Length: 263
Image 1 (cartoon, rainbow, N blue to C red):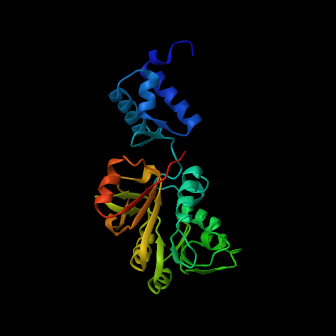
Image 2: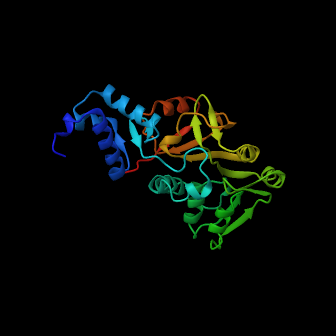
Image 3: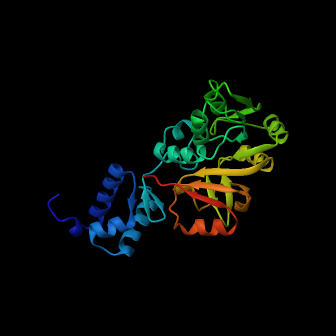
């Protein structure tokens, strides 16, 4: 590039932003302000326009690359996506588990990753609607695994229907790890698929504590189906920055926040 970065035209600047996203995995608005020597309003407008065009994911304070975990993505598209984000969230939750807990583990690729990494030296009881989670624990000799029956929902790779609901409603768990697609103080917890709704709600009712792990892009907004009010969530693990305005609103509802740095 022959001209100085701060002399770029708008279209050239936006192409440069996409290149930075590809190389860095994220961009921060303040970083771009300093790089291009333009105003915060200019960068905000750039990022908002690019998000509307489907070129990136707008998050508080910056942007992330497009993810195959967008609403409507099926299971195979979500597996392997946002690996670093999922890994740091799982690590944060694992540090809190002491062993001996009875866990209700919802479907979701992040929850399945947690199952693969659940310490093999500690005893657990895991009740799950996710076949992948159950298989991930097949070699865990100190973990009793109970898999719900029912119909396989292909997009979410979870078991649903009256058989799954019957099992979940018979459990009293220490902790529920619920999978949601969006978290908002005003709108609550949402999922993409109606068939999962009743099972998720029963999981939350039948656990003493309810935790969720969500990436920054899932904080705020509203999904297709409302699972519960946000105040029914006891703890939220997220990669959203602590200064995200939505997190302050969630804290006012009594949600304990654990903001995890992507590094």
